[in-house]
Image (cartoon, rainbow over all chains, first blue to last red; front, side, top):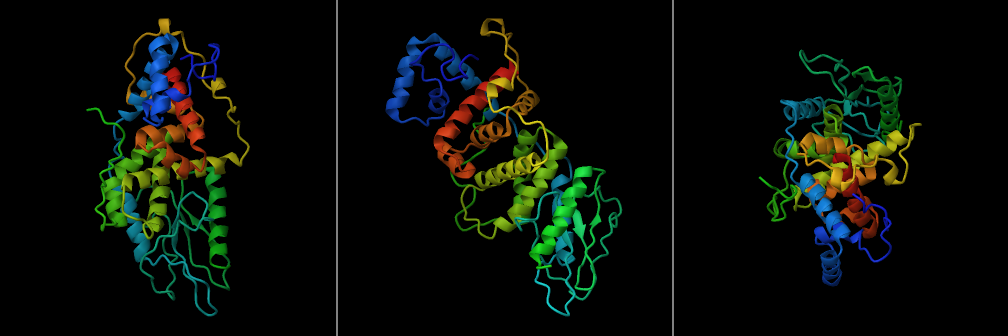
Length: 184
Length: 178
């Protein structure tokens, strides 16, 4: 397609960047009429318009892609499991063991938007039991699991993941993010 | 069957019905997966992205106002994708040049092009050759079906930038498929 650069060697007067907006109905009437008038007499722009319409149609005709079998159900199941175990994000109070069994994905926790809300489990009960692979037949987890931290215990991260060097960086990031969030 | 984007604007969520997270995951999981796959071009990356998105959805449902749930999900997916891209950019990687004309090799002239059927995977593959900002804009426009003003709000760019990226994104895509 020849019309990507602003003038594309055609000199002025070609509404190249307006062509897509025209196809999308995003031009005010007068501008749309201007495009139609121009395209009626300019073969190069007519060709560009056709090619843009082709690309647009190809994209808009893309079918739905089904998630792999069981994937969605698996995500739902793991979220429920995290909820049952009492995924909590609470400020550490003196004398109260802070339990944070959190499923955190490979993303930074800075935004604070990765903590599932769910039942508050028994805060006195260690919830570190989620060792990787505790669910028989569970697929390889892509989530970081951070066990309970309290004032007299340093943080540690039980990490279950595929061998991926960058994951360790993100896991470390997630742990410090979590500690910041709980005021640790 | 020809569809023009996935977005249904007659309101696919009744005004007083905010779905539960489980409902969103089950009913719209494939839609989120589709957007994730078109953006990442890879099933493993798409799965990671979907999980991130569903976690954000969990939190966001508290303030979600009924409307077009798929527009909302599509925007979250795209923004999460771009956040991941920006985070990865902090590590030294080869940056794509800013001039999109340099990204895609020149196509044969129109006269020389042989008509061919572009399969969905061809299109997804071609999408991967777009710089991420262009790819995200094109996905928001044509895969999800948002208007330019909605895309501008979502990406926090002027409408002129949206218009330009949609235009160039499509042009690049067309060239990549040639």
